[in-house]
Length: 464
Image (tube, rainbow, N blue to C red; front, side, top):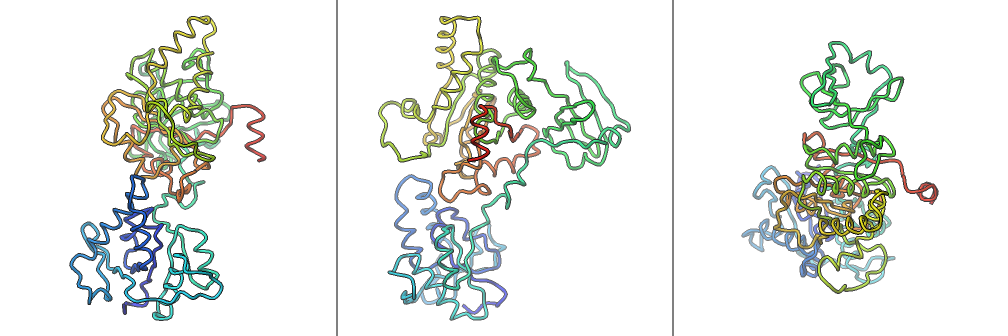
């Protein structure tokens, strides 16, 4: 294992491979080392249909490909990681080929974590000129390792952003001097009842397609960036959904961000919308109002499909009876609550009219489980993915690629409420799509900031 001292040796914990099997190919010129206990744990977790089991099986397949036809006698020299699409890698993969004693002072028993720390300590003694680093998603093993004098790191490669505060918000405030610096050679025109401005100036370079811009000084101005060419941007003035005349299924926007969100949800040219925001900002209500208007009134979509990630907050209540829809019903309390609000918006129809509307709505909303999404194609549907922050980037890809012609996909979530193990704000599938899709002409994103539930909910969100 005599390699150049400037390359590091990364010892991988099992949870890194079960979180991202391709992590084996993410260490560039450095070497990767797998303790025998990691292979054991990988084997113990390979059964089942969970994401973890799939990843364990994929990691095992990668390991077999890397080993290839390497002879057992030459295994100690390492197996090159440069296979298939990873030809640029110069690092090697090493396996533990000899027994390492696990009696560590202060650590009781031969738990898997302790065995991995023993292996790292043993490697440090053998390779004094080289950095040996433990990589794990488990906070406790990293704390134990550091206490034993072993350098330990989290696995960062899956992180889209280091800091979730840097995530694209979908809107920007224009400075006080915007019109002075950008109105030279400005054109304005009307087309199909919509107002457009073509502006030139220094800010244009940093703008993105479908980003909202607002100017809140002497004459408030709210617009969306529709086109970017060279040094010019075409801004379109947004619809004012705060005005009751432009309500959506009886719902009006209560703040600037909600108005921007409704503009995205009602725009037939935008196929993919992401709405981020804490509890009570109106994500589900606005989306359902836009979905019902476009499905029942405008007939743009044939039905609404609602799905959400079923991660319980408390203890699991076991198996549920009934069909797929009935099994999903307990998870859809949010849908029921919002439908109650939307049904009350029409005061003139009376009890009979309301009951008829309710029945019509229920025939058009289908509740589906994520488990049965693979292989499906949705045509002309309005697909709502709730609690999307609990999806991994891979699951998110599986869902979004279900969209057929004429389908609109809306992802809702709050990245501060992640319940899936090993997912963080930086590596959630929701963060991933917001970052990857920004600037695409058929995508829109808004981060909702103001809670509109009640003064009690707002105060609780602030102080608790």
